[in-house]
Structures are given as structure tokens and as C-alpha cells.
Amino acid sequence: MTIDQRRAATIEDVAAAAGVSRAAVSKVLRDAYGVSPAMRERVTAAMVELEYRPKVAARAMRGRTFTIGIEIPDFGNQFFTRMLGGAMGALGGTPYQIVIAPAEEGSRQGLRAIEALVDRQVDGVIAVSPRVDQRGLERIAASTPVVMFGRHDLSDDYDTVAGDDVAGTAAAMQHLLGLGHARIAHLTLNESDQAERSPHGVRLREYQSAMAAAGRADDVEVWRTDEGQDAAYETVRAAIEAGTTATALFAAHDELAIGALRAVAETGADLSVVGYDDVPIAAHPAIGLTTVHQPGDVMGARAVQLLLERVAGRAAPVHEVFQPELRVRTSTRPPAA
Image 1 (cartoon, rainbow, N blue to C red):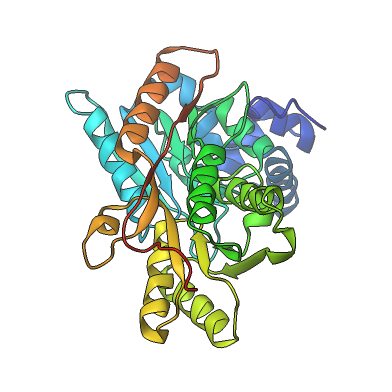
Image 2: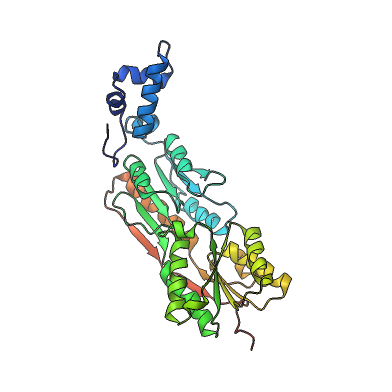
């Protein structure tokens, strides 16, 4: 049996798919005495096929819990902590509390973390999940309000809050090209190609477009790395030691850029570095990172406002985009003669 994936499956759907009564499904859910292994197997298979979530289905009957779930993929990224601070500030004076769920270790998809929040019966979810399938998000949003943070989706079923990554990348690239850099590399995550609507996917594509527009398509260098400063350091140091001819580096976010600066400092390479997000440490005089500023706290607060509007009954989608601003510091300079 198939059901409309835009709504949550009901216990009746499961019963019909398994060819049993509603009472039989209830017995399996309660692990009641007298359920045969064959019936349990059929009901369980139907629940998996229909993506039935018992607690979600019961949401309409239990009212609000005054909790909001926030899924964050990387607590080491200071931009996310800034976003979280803005979200918490926006809830001041309200009865709502925040429940935080990290994405599963080793997976940046985050779907299991979002579903775990939904199973805790939160009233809505703010998620930072660049690779979660849109259909899966819409299935969840059919029963629980969702705001996606950093995604460039245009779904009718959930809201989005993101920065203008096209404009931000253009500002970073124009700055480096204006300084006279012709060989500019881009440091990004391994999976950026697989998440075209994510910030990293957009920044990768716009970097390539900017290089092509400048007549430097043959000089495109994409350095791929795992998440975190240490991984970025290893990747950039390896590229420097391998003899890269790049004189500048545009990093997909500041954590990667800071790792790159460590490699530059240790090797003495003449490599300008630009980051993205403008995390607090970027402005420290010892770092001096040129970066694209995003108002993470304001964006986090707006995500909360949109989610509470959804909880209150707003149906029309809102897709809000925040304008970035380039902050020039000491990590960029003209290339050596």
C-alpha cells in the first residue's frame, strides 16, 4: 500500500498495509501478550514501509509541549553556537524551552536526529541539515512545523532561513581578484557536491563561476577536506608541500579557514586566506581573518520567530535570506611579485 507522503501515516494505514486490525497494530506497539512472531513481523514491516512514527501520529491529541527542537551537525563550529544564542534569546519571556540534538556521529545527514526530536514530541524543529532529502523533510513537516537553517529550498511545507551565499562568495572572490590573485583555490567539505542547495554547495558553484568569469577556469583548484580545523590544516599543509601554485585560498567556512592559517603559519607559505561566517575568534588580532560576515544570532532569532508562527497556524511558507558583508583583515594581501 502507498499513502500520500506529504502526511504522516496513521495506525489505520499500518493496519491496512499489514492486513490486520487496528487493535492488532496497537498490541504490537504495546508489546502486548499473545502477538505471534508472524504478526509482529508483518506489522513492523508495514511501519517501516510507511515510515510510521507512533508519537508523531499522537501529536494532535496531546496539545503543545512548549519545547522546540534544534538539530546541529557540528558543535565545534562557532557559527552554530552564535545561531543557537540568537534562538535562545528570541525565546526569552516565552514558556518555550529548547531541546538540542546533535547529528549522528559520522553522518552529516541529520535525519535521525530530527526524527529523534519529533519523537520527543517537540512543537517544532529548527534543523541544520544540508543533506537531508527534501521529501523526508516534507514528510516530517506534514505533522511537525520545521524551519531549515542554511538551506536554499523553496518548499511549500517548511520555512527556510539562509544567508545570500551567492553574494557572499562573489564578495570574497572579488576581493581576492581585486588584490591581483589569479590562482585561487577553494577549500570545502568532501560532500559539498552532493548538497547543491546547502551553503557549501552554493559557495563551491559560485567559486567556480567566478573563476570562469575572470578567465581563470584552468586555474580552479578545489581542495576537499573533512570537517574541523585539524582536517583543514592537514589538507592545506599537504597541498602546500605538494607545491601548489595557488596564492590565495577561499575557505567554505571559518573553521576550515583557521585550520588553513595554521598550515600557512607553520610552512611560511605566501597564501592569502578568506573565510566565511565571521565567527568571534576571526577578529582576534592574532588571527585577523578576512571573512564574509553573517548575522548568525539574528538569523537564529528569526528562525525561532518563523517556527512559532508555524506552530500558531501560519501555513504560507517563508524563505528569508540575509545579506552578508565582507570583513577585510590581515589574512589577505596582494600576491608576492
